[in-house]
Length: 367
Image (cartoon, rainbow, N blue to C red):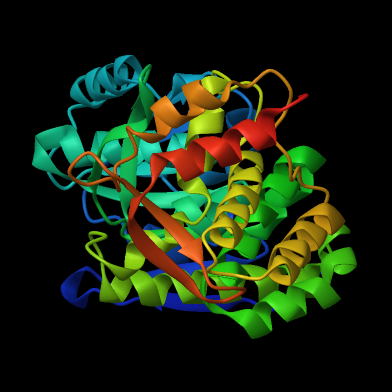
């Protein structure tokens, strides 16, 4: 692939806490660019056992002259846990990290969420930099400051809003990304279009084949468009009091599927893909949207290679019980992100559980 790939810089505008999102090839090696975001003499790179052998050495060359260490997780969603946060905090203690230290998250969404939460906890909050190495984390979890860990009861039930100092999205890291993880990342790109950008949805339909083939120009355009959309939402509603909740389209269903599958049956993006279809079908059931919109969504997800149906072995009543734990719910009632068609998502409070259960039973029948 060419080394002259265009680069994009998008700013998440939050006053004094504004930060850049750099998108392009070779950015991990652009030490002068991201080293400037480090303000102190201590740094800790949090990564995992899959990513670190591939990219840690390149990041380490940019840390020359600092007191730094690394902390590695095992790979997988199950390791986004309180116990690993405690171990990471112990590692910061051994490093002697001061309040101007920086945590660097080198990996996918699990690493980014845990590293950000660790940084939010150490001395009540220190700097961190996101270096996402998966498509999913580049277009979603690395931007916006959501951090956290899972509990057995559900995903991301504990966390904090803690914005990074910078996001370094080196698309070269996607060269080593397994096909399934790449497709899972595309689910979040589709989600952004489905929420509030119908023309972008149409562009994705036209470029599905190029994106599935990882064609670089199309890929950078897709990443930048999704990040630009999310950056705008975060700037307007940082702590998810209103509009930002729309970014959870498909997530209430998807998180329940992930949790029920013990984080091994579905990747996050796969859960979001199925969850978006369920949200679209529920919208139809409630008379909010047309079947044609659902069919277009299913068609685009399928063209990218994503699942659109609930896998075998899931129980509708169990899924509904998990959905009741979702953070968006209020006063004991379901609060879901539904839509009135492509590009027109909205928050719907007080959704009747009977409608949700009927949908889930239909989706789980015979599977």
